Every structure is written in C-alpha cells, then in structure tokens.
Image 1 (cartoon, one colour):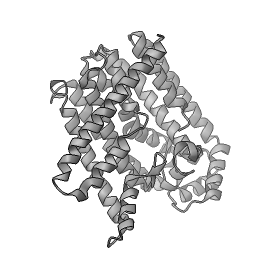
Image 2 (cartoon, helix red, strand yellow; image 1 turned 120 degrees about the vertical axis):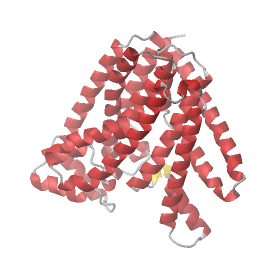
Image 3 (cartoon, one colour; image 1 turned 180 degrees about the vertical axis):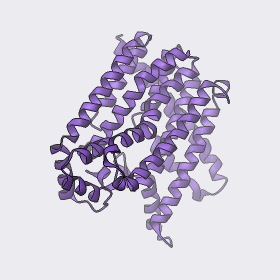
Length: 364
C-alpha cells in the first residue's frame, strides 16, 4: 500500500468515526429534546443536516496534528475532538449566514431560511423572516453548547488548564472577535482610510477564518497528543499562512466562482458587502471613480448580473485579482516550505500536504 492510499484509508476511517460519533451524539440530544416538546425537533434536525457532509477540513487538520505528534490511529479522544470541531463549525456557519443575510449553504437553504420556510409553510402569524433569524440564532447557540459538551467528554486531556483546553478556548474567542471586525468593516470601511483596507481585511481573515480553519485545529490535535512546544510552533508556521491562503481562495470564488460548483449564487459576497482582501486591492488600485462605484455597490442586496459583471471587470482590470492570486501563491509557498521543515513521519506529512494542496487550489 502506498503512502497516499494509506492516508486515504486512515482518513476514511476517521471521517466515518466522526460521522458516527456525531450521529450518536445528536440522536441522544434529540431524545432529550423530545422530553421538552416535539415542537423543538427542527433545532436538532437543522444541526444534523448541517454536520452531514462537508469537507471536514478542521477535523482532519486536528487528526493529522494528533498523528504527527505520535497519537495512535482510531483513538476515541481524537474522534471526539473532531466531533466538537464540526459542531463548532456548524454554529459558526449558522450565525455567519444570518449576519451575511445568506439564504444558501452548500447548495441548499441556510438554517435561518429553513425556519423561514417552516413558518410560511404552516401559515404562522407575524413575520417569517424574523422567526427564521431568531430560531437560527438559538440553533447556533445550541450548537455551541453541544460543541463544548462534546469537547469536555474527552476528559483530562481537555481539562481546564491543559494546553488543548487553552487552544480550544482561544479559538472560539478569536472567531467571535474576527466576526465582529468583519461586520465593523462592512459599515465603517466606506468612511475609513482606503489605504488601510487590505491590512484590515488581512486581520479579519486571520481571526475570523484562518486560525480556526487550520492553525488551531492542527495545534489542538497536537496538544491532545502531548506535542512539545517546538512542534506546535512548527505547526503554526505551516498552518497559519495556509489558512489565510484558503480564505483568500474562498473570497475569490465568492466573486468569480461557478454557482454550480460553489453552491452559492454568483456575486453573493458582493451583495453581502464583504470587504475582503480582493475588494481591498480593488478599492486601492482602481481609478477613483471606479473605486467610488465599488463603495456604493458593495452590500446592495439588489445587485443584478449586469452590476456583478461590472464589478468583476473593475476588479480584473485594476489588477486586484492578480494581486490577490499573487498573495495566495506567496502564502501557499510559505506554508509548504514550513511543512517540509516539520519533523514528521511520512504518513502525516503526505496527508498534510494533500490537505494543503486541496485547500489552496480548490474550485469550491
């Protein structure tokens, strides 16, 4: 068996373990909720739907951080950690979709949209949109609670004061801070100094996405396996630029991606008003009149195909797309160079290289 096939087999076993753990955990929660009222069933149903499938990037980073630090394959603790990360990711997605007013997720309705549709289907009173948002907020909060409950199940390795607990706590706090920076930039960006837009967007990417997508999960797995500080530092040197490149690739797809592949309408990020690195470069590099046009159009939910096409033209012609692609390449190179310096055995090294290549070169 080659290293690649060995990686595939081991990852499949881990992913199946996480899926089974999530299914069992949520089934228990469903039984508990049934004692409250059958009316709350859609809460657990929405969570179950969201954690089924997906790339499992965070769980896999955690797993290979664990294996790279000498953790054994198939250990129940690392499967539980993967489950906790998937639940935290689901909570973040639910809340992010509400904040961004995004009605689609992975090619289907987002959680708040599902509750909106439930309201309309039953002909309930009052405002369906407000009901959908409120129900989804509660679902996301419940998901956060489940994530904590799952992580605590690990026991002494995840106990208060442990390295793994510190990483898990910091990860959750930083995501909330990064999310706030994101919504702040949407409203304050148009009146702030344009020269700082790219650096502000980089900070948002780092704290809202990169750290919790790659850096913290990899370190978390390592810490659970007892990794020394030197290895955790090396993990960070690899995973942080990787996470930043991953998010910038996501931002490019949010403007130029094929809806059939991404599962989201074309130009949705523009309608949501996301002030990404791509947009920051465009606002800095476009002629003043076109930069003003971008400022006016960003965040307009009524953007049609003509306006989206015009924004794309501005982004391309001013060199913002090329600048973003160059930065993605620079960050990717930095990550791969750091990966080669890690003192890892062949299996985790091959696995992390494959995850990194998929993260920065994906089309969805």
